[in-house]
Image (cartoon, rainbow, N blue to C red):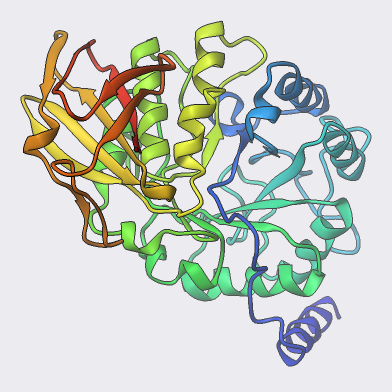
Length: 402
């Protein structure tokens, strides 16, 4: 009987025009926190409430981090008698709706996780065959964000599976940001714009700079591996549809310099800024990095243009991103094993982006230079830029046209 009910809901949804996603959401890359990187499936009510409190107390919410996302492990190991998901009663004794109300009471948005397969990656009930029931459940709980994974999906077509959940979310009637997490295996950037609001472009991140950690049939990837993994996909990103480089590892055993470079690159590349560290115990330096409003403004720029590598000379990677009002963001990342003395002559370079048709004529137009991590002005582009960049550190600038 339940199968017929689900089928009827799917048919009814199609007849009523539910074959679309919610528009007007994620017009800039979503910002928030996700439980997986630090806690995996070891999450409970007290932890999530503590994270919600910390997002407010540390200034993260006010800096723009509003989505608090529970990843795998929140649900019971089986559905109830009506085929509905419910929270693990030991981990979440007051239930998921009450937890959502607490998150909302803090001025935050409630995010949750499931999987397109029969089971989640952690072995909990997946949404396969239950998409419309699950979507309605999330809507009833007040969910604002759904991360939808790709484990245990034997013989499923990725585009079709994500379309089914997209339609189910729309049929439920509550605007929910839909995060496609199928690891880039089926080129979601080519079809994801119509299905969701962001899509993962790689497998899981791990807290190392430039490594691959093998797990047999799959791998986890370091920050710089992820940055270099996909080519020519920036054209698919923009307001309401983003290339997702995965949750950040800022604050997870990186040096302060590596944290800054990691954060700068996610911002230049217009990736969602989803934290993955334990924000309750982070250092003040990590907090200052994550709440740096000048860097965040680069990520949240209204044009929504994903940046790109402009130069790689002397093992200094230079990445640029066109911004609104004719401004430009530039990151110089030192990949050397020793500090580097930068001497960058603006008059010898033409900044331009063929994709967006944005160009800066540095020979004729003057730009003020703003150092985004040190919050100070560095003169203008009439003179060469001289600076010392530490190992794996970044000099991140905003050029403001005069």
